[in-house]
Image (cartoon, rainbow over the protein chains, first blue to last red):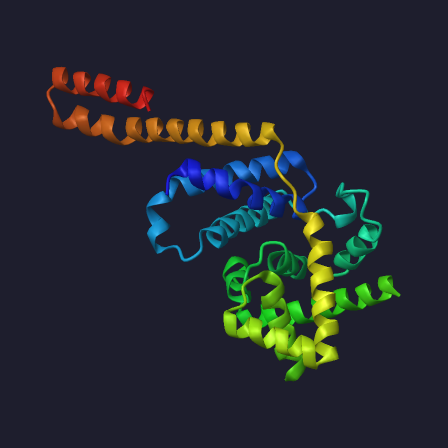
Length: 152
Length: 112
């Protein structure tokens, strides 16, 4: 697969993930550049990669963590994001997500938005699958309870 | 145990990753078990709500990032070539030949 094809196909999921985690558009752009530069320079490793999307998201995640650590920054609270106004329950959903730890929000995003498996998320976050499953269970229960409340 | 199984099955179905056997099982449970039906409805709604967090990059970012990746890679390649190959040529080839090779190499690097 050529770099241009990879870029065209995976820019959106990587951008979307970084935008979900960080509100700063400049920081998102910087991490995107570093991520795709790493992809460009490691194209020869592609034949050993099981899932291209997971591989690229893993690179992006680690670049983001490095950036936050280096500049002593934190993930921006979800209420700083600008989202579509038409979602009436949107603010409440963000409030529920804010109560989760950053790893759990990544897991929820990965499962529901990117359709990643627990195994893929474990590789991406460099944690055991059991931890992903237990964090996912707790977070999903919390989110479903919220859903029951807003639907009442 | 049953709750965990239902959760895994509902999520796999919502993700669109369910096999044929799993889909048949989902349809059976929808018909037979109100508890699973309720769980599945909640999972579908959750996926719908969370999909609002998906966003597309503005065209300026698409262009900027691509340009930056290509130009940074070219700069790195040129710098690496200068730092590694030039001393080798200088040390191992006669002066006239090494300067010719370096000029060719620069022209190749410039042309990408």
